[in-house]
Image (cartoon, rainbow, N blue to C red; front, side):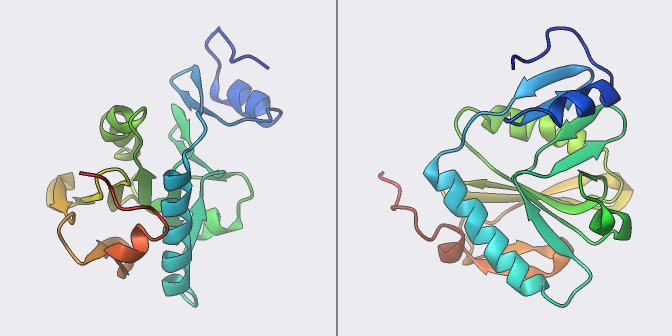
Length: 187
C-alpha cells in the first residue's frame, strides 16, 4: 500500500502502520518509507546486537533491533537500527518503546545526513537517552554523542580506538568485532 499523501495523527499512523508489510517512520504527521539495508549494514547490526546483548545478560537492560518502534512525544515514531532500554515500561511493551538509554544508527550513504541531523534532533528529545552512536561500515568510523551536564551533547570519536565504548551501558565491543564479516574498505 502507498504511503498516505495527507498528514496523519499519531494514532492514525499507528493504526495504518500496524497493517503494513513494510516499515514506515512518522514525523510531525508525515510518513516516510524505510529503504532496504545493505549486507554490511545488517552485519554491523547483528554484530552489535550479539555483543551488547551478551554483555547485558543478567542486567535489567535489553537490546532491541531494527523492527522495533521508538516513540518521541506525540510527534515522531522511528525505527532505530538498535537501542538499549532499561525502563520497566519499555521492557513490558510489545509495540512502542519510549525510553531508550542508548540508540545506535548504522549509516548508509542514503541516510547519513538524516541520521546526523533531523533524526538526532528528534532522539535528543527523549529524556532517558544518554548516548547516540553512529557507526559507518563504509569508512569504519564510530562516533558517540553523549549527553553531558546542562543537556549538552558531546562528540566522542572512536574511529581510531581499539574498542567501541557504549558508556551509557558500560559496554565495550572491539572495533574488529563491530565490523566482523565485512570486507576491508578499499582505499
